Length: 101
Image (tube, rainbow, N blue to C red; front, side, top):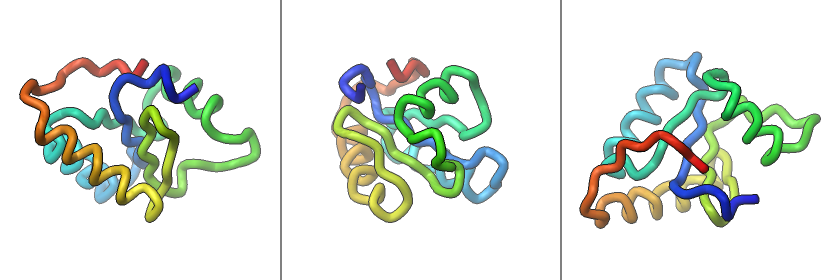
């Protein structure tokens, strides 16, 4: 399931201003390597969330970092998030494609 993901995706609460600023900062620090998407923003993300999370789980209470190795939320996602930022810093191209598959 996670092997289809090309670039890391940061899912955040797009109804929260601080969460939005956090997501934008992570995107900029990684030079565009980390894609960002709000919990409530698109149908494509909703279908991805149905694949990743159990039906009875509400993933909107925290941010999630999703990459080829898995999905991590909140504090457990800090180290994978930092690793993706470092990968983005050392890549030479700036990434602009917004597709996560």
